[in-house]
Amino acid sequence: MTGWNTDSVIDLLLECAEIARRIKADPEIEIKDDRTPVSNADKGIEELLTQRLGAENVLGEESFQKRNHEQLIDRLLHGRIWIVDPIDGTANFINRRPLWGITIGYAENGIITRGGVFLPEFGQLMITGDDGKTLYSGADHPYPGAAEVKNLLVPAKHPGRAFNETSCINLSQVFTKKGTFTGRNPVIAIGSCICSGMDLLLGRDAVYMTHAKLWDMAGILPCLANLGFYAVNRSGLSLMDCRITPELFQLEAGAKIPFALREMHWIGSSRDAVETIMPLCRV
Image (cartoon, rainbow, N blue to C red; front, side, top):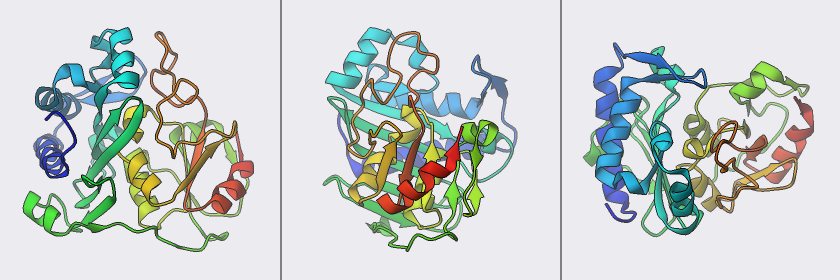
């Protein structure tokens, strides 16, 4: 696949989900150098994605270290590239929780122009159409087939829920281990960037705090940006223009956490929600 085609990307996401489905009951697990888990499902799905999309065209969580860094960054910022996470929420996956999914983003000249995420155990898909507009499909049962997913596709809408102190705030794993939230709002931490993006779309959370990596976010950013979601970090930089820049992400060779955001970001249903919650988060 040389460029974005929504129909083909949906087929690919569902094919990846079937690999995960076969493995999930008894995955083989390793601990990577960064002390995070990886399973044979992560590896198998990324192998499929690199075969279908071309290894030279892919930035993937499980394979980026095999690439020449200078060539990879040049492709990322000045060419066309697929940005994939074979399983976002691996800790949930290997511990038999349903909060995981597969994400594929597509960038041209350093801008993420298209993206898609599929949550197999919820039957939920969020994706940009060929025209760039955000679509949603909710089968609401595990592992729907491609025909059902495509038949249920509808234009996505901003949830439009009013923000108040009962609105739920989704906190990152990094923050839950090191930070303090002093607000009255209920909080949650679910351990999956794309599940958190879906919860924003569905109005379950008003704000999502994240310190994620590029491949975690590439599938959800264009979808949420199209719908008017707001994002910012303490330096005043925003993710919602979908640009991949060294000011936002750790792109340099030898980065401490390669391709991770440099700072915490808050993504929310409104500017008011984000600017209310940010000062209440302390690290």
